[in-house]
Length: 125
Image (cartoon, rainbow, N blue to C red):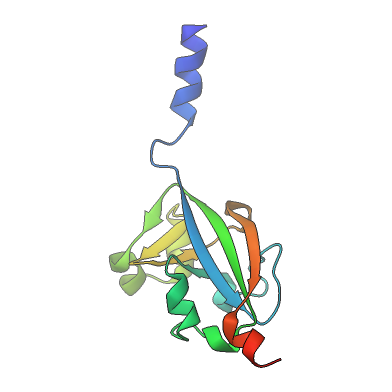
């Protein structure tokens, strides 16, 4: 049994973690798709207030989705500034971490846990 547990642990990434982040949109999004993302990726921010302040297109957004991002291997600013998105993905990265912003390649790593109307959309009713 001990050998089985040790073999199973070898398949798990010690770097895997879950990030709580947000995405603003004019539509409610229950499942993300790269088909609708700019350049085939999906953008998120850990700073919900950044979206509400309009620094991420927020007040033109009617909805804010709270999501869990599962990340194993994240690229950073160096890769983002020196490689194309496709090169980053092809090098085995599942995400890009840019301070408090995240770029995700695989929608299966995005779990929507809550959808809220933004205060600015409620004011315009």
